[in-house]
Length: 401
Image (tube, rainbow, N blue to C red):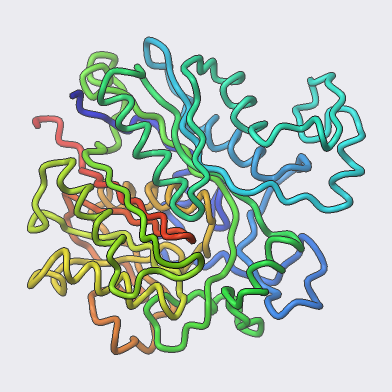
């Protein structure tokens, strides 16, 4: 099996639309949450979200625009040799009546150069995959992941295996999503999943805090360029990190709640470490799923404690969602970029809004401010609705190793 390097990164997020600006914001602990502006949410219990600040005209399908931009950034350098593949985590197609009418217009949802006339019925749900493969010349059969909140991490993990095995020469991998619309926000309100702290939006996402009341919905995309470490070295590519392990699991428990003992979460983390042949004693940091929901946070804490044993309270645990909200299918991909920023900088980004720790959440969550800490291995977790769990293990790059 080949070692796999990350040689490109792209991000569109509520706190920065490049990997560099995102990393700067996440280390500074900036929140991207505010009142919803994309539609009139005045009739909903939740009226806040973490929206992307987009300059210029926005195509109708935001998640496709986000994916194309993040992929452009990730692939902006010299292309690797050989044939590449796409592994993409993507969410539900949520159309409004306005969308259906708009799709009667020529080229709706497509680049301006397109001359195709699409109707709602004729629009494929894999349009993002088609456009990404076409634009970047990806001729290997693409892989599409719809594993809810774990989709972005599953996409990266699967691409890692394809490149490691030699099935693909290189890959674009990540996730994209945008559910900040009446159906998306309304649906999560229906199951009381989202925060209703409308008066203090920037303090609403508060993973592991006693006063958390649900997650904040976000949007965006994260994309990584993966290739074999050997080929990356040969062509002099800038190597950002290595992916060394991937694990996934399924709870078979509940549709919208995790197994209370974190059975699936623990299995995903264990399998990522086993895949990498790395022991729990070598883990320096965990980028937590950390949703700010009443059930996820203590579950994840318990799973981390079972994984790390007596070292659990010595290991930094950070929650990117405290700043960007929950990007659903894009969450794991954007959070992988945050984890790589920690590896590269020697700092662990903070979990903001952690003012009153929950007694059931008693680990080192790096509250409020980033801490300087050399990290070699970071686990990045994504645990999705329906019990779909995924973890990847990232390693700092050592040119001598």
